[in-house]
Image (tube, rainbow, N blue to C red; front, side, top):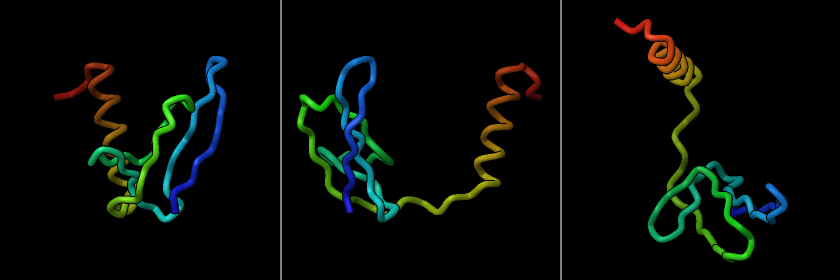
Amino acid sequence: MIVTEPLILNNEEFIRTYSNANRYVVRNNRQYVEAYDPARFGRTYTEGDPLPPYDPIKELRAKAEGYEIMVGDRT
């Protein structure tokens, strides 16, 4: 199900939109894990494809690679 939550960022109201069914949210044929839009835009989303399963090893490898790139220790 699509979930929307209002929030204030830099004194402006935004709407956070996400799926509580572990799916992408879709607008204009583009898929997002979650979306943050100024409330004044009134954007709406539908549910899309399922999100890929969480892989902590893949995330750790990506972080390690990013670190190596940042510190210039990549061979």
